Image 1 (cartoon, rainbow, N blue to C red):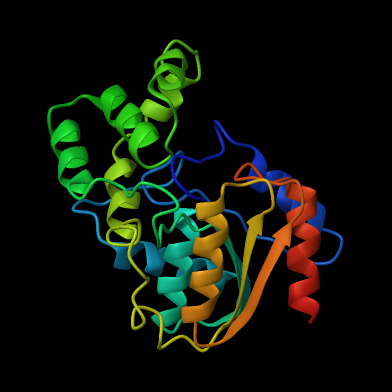
Image 2 (image 1 turned 90 degrees about the vertical axis):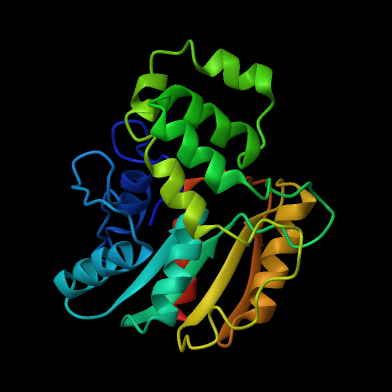
Length: 242
């Protein structure tokens, strides 16, 4: 499951990941609610996204191993806690901030994002997310707005609030809640990139510590949030076979 903004028109990553596993597994990829060719129903509720994943798993035969990237990883953890028939869950760099190794997301982030969207300022909503949750420098985001592909990001600007809601309370610089996922019975591997910042490493280790059926963490040397699809596919395949 993809994280913020990702869908096929602007990000071929999911297809590359599926291709790397196609000789061993049947792989299902899909565009999350409100993105690309997928439909959308307002008002948004995280539970509808969990139902979407449940529908994919049903199509796959009733159970499946699942990979979640970034905020999509947190959504997959919520799905596991809700009892979806997931056999193995791999989470790559869920962007949790658990200490002072990085400044937290603003407390009013979700309210501000919704206000910007309500005013019809889709480009500003994308820029706000990029600077305050992706932590990109403002000058880099300003340059992005001149790129031809920025319009494809604006097309899914409404999902800024969706992922903002999923991550609410998890980027505060405080310890993770111990009860959010405690009903999960799914073996879960938390993966992160060795070249990512220290706050990402700390968050991954803290996440593995609070999960009830943790398979621990795995660090992929030289990788960051933009992880190599083939390398992650091999890591996930080994985990499924374990």
